[in-house]
Image (tube, rainbow, N blue to C red; front, side, top):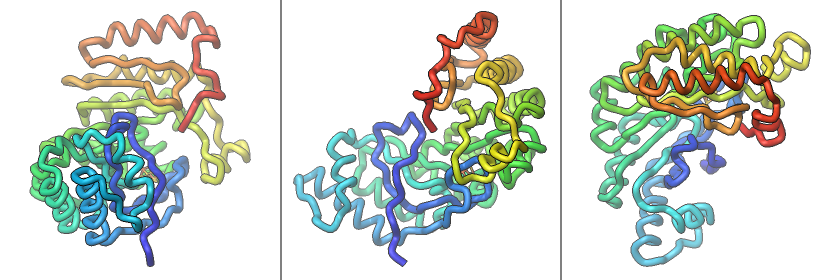
Length: 310
Ligand code: SF4
């Protein structure tokens, strides 16, 4: 079956990257809150990926476009600075190791000045990879893996179908770091609903502390129509926390986490309020900012619902 190029879903920090699809969908398509729920994983042929890399090089060296290449290739290349590549899609780290190695080698061969390759990876992808395999990928410029942690609370993880528990999240995160690959993780405010809010925030702080990633980002739960969690909410079986309660969760996470040196942010468009800072260095300032917002409880200070994004 012909590989269908996925739409671009990427971490904010990859805005200047070239987006190279290796897969479409996600191999762990069971998370009840996620737009990839139920998606069918498709794996692209290596030769097809290499043909796209050839087309990239041809365009950058000689300005020649290949008519059969999708226009998005050239649209992205026009503003690409040649430094970073982001491998699509939901978890490109599931791409079979040998093929992934060949793609990374080919990228470096064609673009020797490439600085970093990034990819989403599920904890399952990391756990099933060998440490040596991950190290090899790191040596081939896979410099950062973005892993969804979502929550540190086992009850929440199980309820939303994450497919791993707290302990496995920690094992996966530490393994990527041990392999020399930078780790950026995301957690989701509100994923425990109103009933599980406190436990979700505290356990999330604990899992983040234990993983100790270089980057951590908080998102706020946004229900996606068509997903099981949206359906639960519609039936009245799941209650969304309020915007101010999402900031209370955020404060609990920042306050209770203990990092070596982590850039923490809630800059994602799904959040009602953005904070950022190096932790633990700027912990007092970040917590103070959140305490201030929580004390004032002024809705004007929050991102309007209309401007929130996924
Ligand atoms: S593993 Fe990540 S991308 Fe895949 S369904 Fe779960 S949250 Fe979505």
